[in-house]
Length: 522
Image 1 (cartoon, helix red, strand yellow):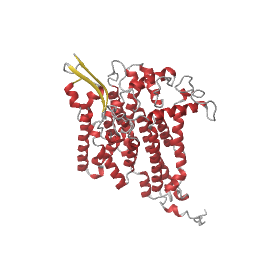
Image 2: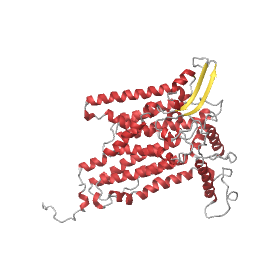
Image 3: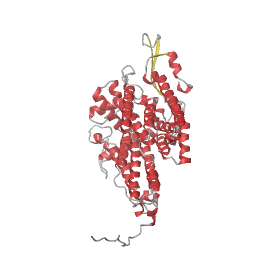
Image 4: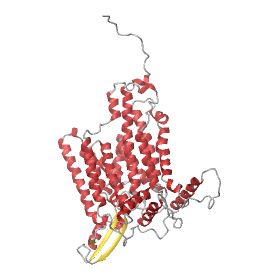
């Protein structure tokens, strides 16, 4: 047997950047990957599905009540007939005489599916909204679990969203705001999964000692979850134009998460690396894909002969031009919609009785009365005179804590650079801050429907601090569990108290007055 010595052939030294971090640098890998996901995957899904079923029962309960003498209530009077047109025509509205088609078609297309299944009746008007609201519960449980790495806190987020009055009422009316809320929440969840996926890919590169091969860091390949986030953002835009705000805010969030990941991996120039490696694909995923899906939602209108403003070329617009007629028509249509929104100002001296300004929204100081009916006789309220009302109102046990909860998140971002709080603030800000740009416009509290889940997440992150971690000791954990349990019980009890005015149950006039805690609620 011939024994050979170890080869002494010199190998080229790795670049200097490769020493930061070293291939087996455990602290760098730990920083990249952060806390692992909980190992109770089965229990995590059981919790999510059970809460979804509970939320579905709550959202669908007596869904056909109330009505306005058999007709839709509040702004259902706009969207329900438009959804029926969509169903009748195969995906588009054809109401040029009315000319109040002021939102993209996807929400009304989804409502049309409910009318197709259940018919043109109150359940059919609202079934799609109730389903979307139920899916929001499933989404937030999974999102909170990933955000906190805790199945318990994930379940708590589901309970709080079930007990949120804004989310509850929005899921029980034939209006459109619950649909962008669902798609925005799904986009946020996809971004969280993409963050974990990116860090896992970078951890592999670090472990293999290749992080220093380029000062910009490695290419990361196709990021399917980023594409999924872009698709959900496109659906939110196709449901309501306010999806534009989330595209912009989530795009910035995505760039920030990528830069932080490259920096944690030890990339020599992480921010430039993000610009070079990540921004162009992100523009495709989170800008081009949403635009394509938005246009796709108009395909029935594009193929139609009678869609509103479909054939304006040759009539209101001159024939010819470089752009196809359908695109010129869509631009014309969209310009009119934009003009409607831009000129929807509050009339001086004659405001809408339930409009409000954004500084009142975080605490829900000016809710919305969707339905009100008084009656006499045997209506089941225990009195000869009864009231049935539906009010869009945020559960005070949550909404009145918005300022301290958001303040705590901001403090955690500033003092601890906690990305979880930053991400939640981005989601909240995307649905709230843009409305300050035109305070003369008519605005309403129901614009906060997509923001409500982010308030829940902010509260859950704060409750996680009260709960503590196992390594902090049993006494600390028991005290935290008591605080969180008492608070959760308070929220559920508050929701139960508000229940009659969230679903329109017949109640006495005295009970109706007892529900209105603030003068601004009247």
